[in-house]
Image (cartoon, rainbow, N blue to C red; front, side, top):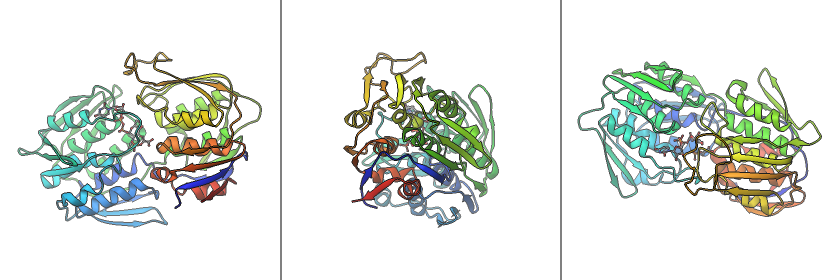
Amino acid sequence: MNNVLRVEGGRPLQGEITVRGAKNFVPKAMVAALLGTSESVLANVPLIRDVDVVSGLLRLHGVKVDFDQSHGVLKMDPSSVESAHVADIDAHAGSSRIPILLCGPLLHRLGEAFIPDLGGCNIGGRPIDFHLASLRSFGATVEKRPGGIHITAPDGLHGTQIELPYPSVGATEQTLLTAVMARGLTELRGAAVEPEIMDLVSVLQKMGAIISVDTDRTIRIEGVEELTGYRHTAMPDRIEAASWGSAALATRGDIIVRGANQPDMTTFLNTFRKVGGAFDVLDDGIRFWHPGGDLKSVAIETNVHPGLMTDWQQPLVVALTQARGLSIVHETVYENRFGFTEALNKMGAQIQLYRECLGSLPCRFKQANFVHSAAISGPTPLHGADIEVPDLRGGFSHLIAALAAEGVSHVSGVQVISRGYEHFTSKLKSLNANIQGL
Ligand SMILES: CC(=O)N[C@H]1[C@@H](OP(=O)(O)OP(=O)(O)OC[C@H]2O[C@@H](n3ccc(=O)[nH]c3=O)[C@H](O)[C@@H]2O)O[C@H](CO)[C@@H](O)[C@@H]1O
Ligand SMILES: C=C(OP(=O)(O)O)C(=O)O
């Protein structure tokens, strides 16, 4: 695919598209396959770059990976897992955040792991201190090496007690993937409970794990000696679904998102309704549309589940530029997730950023000098511009802004978007968008 899209905006997006398995679940289920003694089969797998990256990493470790792309069925056979060459793994440095989750499974299977430096969106410092503290508490030894980290477990991995300082999605998954085969009981307090984590718990349970999740963010895992392969259908991508909902709103359009699942999106749907968007829950998806008239301004704060997802924030902000009045967005998950607004201002939006907490949720960034709140005055007509994709969700937001704007935009660096949005150019074309690769 070409890296620059010419977008002629001003047309409502209309039609229907389908979302498949979640970017923030599928790669983790792929990592879980490493723990099994037999083949795992995962269905509803989308064609996105993070799936390619993890397929590559699994293959390097001797897993046979067979991806039937048209049906979205991935078969993974880990019966002959082996150590990969460090130089080969190094080639994956900076590609995604998933490699850190290989630690536990590789320690169980091979007794050691080399993990390349991580990638993922540049929306904050994104340290891995909780991951490493968790692994050390299971008995692992971590050593920094050029290009990554080397991990061993000289005395094996044993159950432990962990309390996360913040309900980190990745650190919760790290703990789960390590605890399921560690000796004894692990108690994880302060865990994240995002639906993608619950789907991973389902996969691990199918494999033979014993995991209980309490209502107070405590997860208890009884280690078992052996896990088998699994058969599972991945939960749909609630971030992609919400992104298309925001695109319908920003362009005054009407989009049916087949595959969108209401229970995973309750908080988004409440916000969507408060802004003035209309939706209808269908048997196999959700229809999102702009009902006409003015959109309404809102004050929102991102938070861990069941709060308003941070990954929903960026596309929604584009729709908020078209709402009447002053909208406030307080980002409490990442300290630096408003960089994408610079391009929106260039296109005519009026978004002012603040270091203060413009909201009442407890926030780690209070008085820490991070620009993490935004005030959006609207409605402001948007006009076409030449803009550069900064990150995955920011990139999709730029596309929506270009589609909502009058005139022509050139959006460069769009390949980043394929990390989490399957076939996004053909989906846009099917929704009547006027886009061309250059
Ligand atoms: C591949 C994937 O699933 N990515 C998602 C995952 O990212 P990821 O798992 O990286 O996000 P986390 O939930 O871990 O991060 C949340 C916050 O905790 C901080 N933190 C995290 C780990 C750590 O060791 N130390 C630390 O300080 C982070 O800097 C961030 O401020 O959850 C995020 C929060 O829902 C989503 O935005 C990402 O789309
Ligand atoms: C931040 C995101 O992803 P990652 O953690 O993979 O960078 C995202 O999906 O919006």
